[in-house]
Length: 338
Image (cartoon, rainbow, N blue to C red; front, side, top):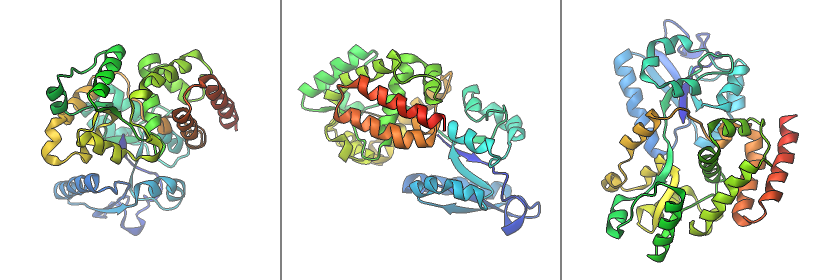
């Protein structure tokens, strides 16, 4: 989920920023560097200027660079409005006074959002620091035409999913597209399985260092995931998510567990074959809780130095779950007590 967030710094009116009551400009820090979202944002900013008379000056930085430099950016002179993520990452900066309280804005716009979205925008002090800008769920995505041509039915249970994967494999399809070259897709897979097996509260507490990775409930997640691995696209550690998405678009893979941004990789003329937007709205609207992502719901250092290599180790060698979870737990204790 990406959000617009108001910082406390950089609002003294200097440099033509939005903090100056006489200014007609608003500076915006953006990490929407990919072509499709960048184009969408440009339209939003144009509409904002037309409606308000305020000119947004957008500072777009390459997505990964933006994230790597966020600490220095916020402690310098950040833009009037900047884009970031909810969950632990939002709370981290809010606690340090680097984000502005926008609770008054929520009093005006709160009716447009569900309680789950408001909760995800709230800091540890009970105040709101973010305004949701866009969001998307993770789900098993598929092309309707592939299912119709082969007589497949969407799975409603785990057993049905495995049976469907076996059927697809027998028909010459890769059942589940999979990629983890960049490290983060596997984290989302873990999130997805953990919340459905163990519930939201356990997942969030595990991310916060309050539950042990040696808990049998964690082992159950890895054991369940291991059952799906034989039906997942081989060579995942050398493949980007875009490349895996192309296998879905080209009807070489039957399903793909990822965020609904996968639709960007499908030719525009074929996007109705996924019917994504309405289902995304319905799914988010019905959610009692909204999580972010493993590397946004936990400490960034734990996510990057422990979880990325650990999950990639599991993909390479999925049989030693006990050894893997023990190693994760030992590293967690060191990081969360530092």
